[in-house]
Length: 180
Image (tube, rainbow, N blue to C red; front, side, top):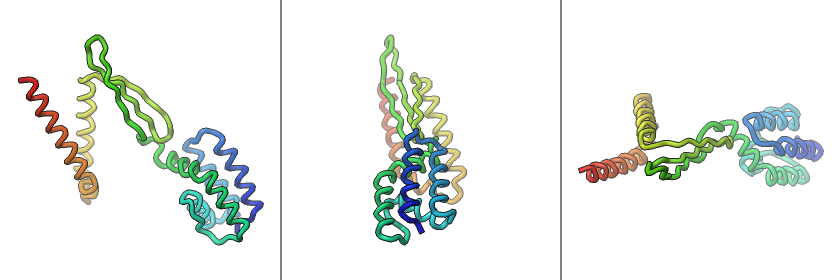
């Protein structure tokens, strides 16, 4: 069982870990810390981590320890949940944004990508490279469909695919109409 001294120790170490930028290793550090604080009891470690991330106490504690856990949840819960997301999905895209630019009469796009782990990338594209990107990802969608043996992805993304197809169809008509 967690006592107030162990929770005070946890508090100090969480402050140290989370004072630095969150990286993929931060979550592992937190897991190891919780394992030690929970006297190397894996079940208690899981309950403590679930309590912090889900912001709801999932373990039996005395009143003093419960207050300390609530304080830890309040102060560190969001950061620990972020550390878990960075650990699990850090390289996935969190934000994709583009700005239209006119440069010497030419249309360009300034593209920004931010990953969940906070890394940011910027690149320029012209209409030709924009079509190359679209063709590439349409190919990935075709590959997704070919490998979706259960039909799970097809069901999950059907409405988005219909909306995407409708937008592309309307855009195709506009391109066709303006070129005649």
